[in-house]
Length: 296
Image 1: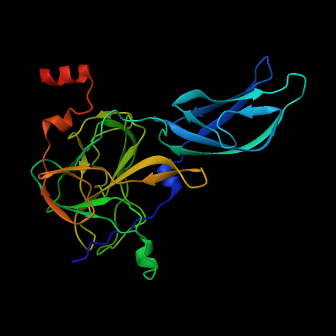
Image 2: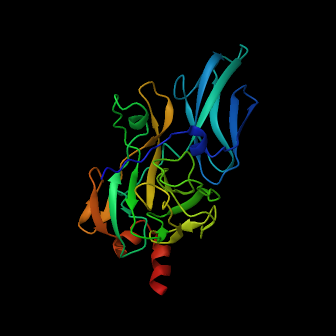
Image 3: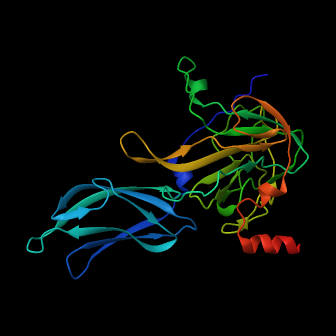
C-alpha cells in the first residue's frame, strides 16, 4: 500500500494572519527607531528591505532582521551617519512566525504525539506536487504522518506553549487523498521553532492559546477516518530560515522521534508502539518544573 499525503504550503496559514504593525520615530540625534506591535502570543522574525536609505545605516546590511515579541518591541535602529545632513528612507518588510535567533542547548527529541501504548505506523509525507506533476519529483521534506488503528488521544510531542489552533473544520467527503483545510494545534518551543499537529477531530481541543504544555499532555482527539489510508495524525515542524538570497522563509525540517527502538528521523515507513519515557518528558523542564512534577 502506498502512503501518499498531500501537502499545500500557504504562508498565510503559517503566519496565522498575525497583525504586525510597524511604527517609526526619530530620537534627539536624528536616528530612526523602528518598533513593532505584535498582537499574537509568540515572537515573529521580521526582515526589512530598504529601497532608499539616505544618510542612515542599518546593522545587518541591506536586509536587516529583528524580533517582534508579543506586545510592542524595538526591532531596528537606523543610525544617522552625518549629523549635518538630512535623512530619508523607504522600506518594505516581511515577517515569519518564530525566532530565528533562539537556539536550544540540547538536541530536542519529540514524542510520537499519540497516547502511550498505541501501535502506529510512521511515514514521511509526500509533497502535493508529486500528485499534480508526477513527471517532476519533489523530494522536499513536508512532515511525518502516523497512522492509527482507532480514534485516540493526541498529545504534545514536546514542551512549549500553544500558539495557534483551528478546530472547526468538519470533513464533508470520504475517500480523500488530501484536503486543503485541516484542524490543527500549533506549539511554540523555546528554541524559536514550532510544531503543527494536524488532522484532529473538530471541537475536541483540550487546550487553549497561551497554555503551556509538556510532552504527553493531551491536546485533542484524532481524526482522518475520511481519508483513503484511514486515521492518522500529521506532525509538521517549522523554523525560520534564510534562502540562498538571504530572504527569510518558513522551513519544514526533519526531527528525531522517540520510538520503541531508539531515536530517529522518519525517512522510511516504521512501526512502533508509542512510549513516553520520563527522561523525555522532563528533558526541557526547568528546576522549578522538575520540583513540581516530583510532588505529583
